[in-house]
Length: 95
Image (tube, rainbow, N blue to C red; front, side):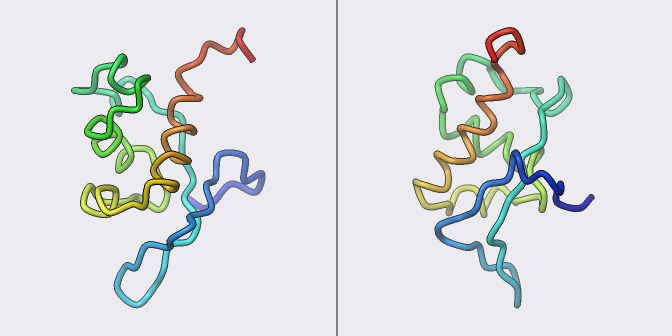
């Protein structure tokens, strides 16, 4: 999977993530499906519970972030990614 040309659901990280010799500066968030939400309470996710976010982000990001990378995210980057995930929970009629 490559980053979507529209960049609509892409977050530019304030603090890039080091992975080996490369840096991740942009992360695309894909729409979660029922499988990616398993084991996560929707209320916790809607309330931006950090544990819930650390669990779901590796399942819905490209490049796929690890739980450890998610746990090390700077707060502004975590909030930006959380906003993308929470945005998917809104009914389309609300848009």
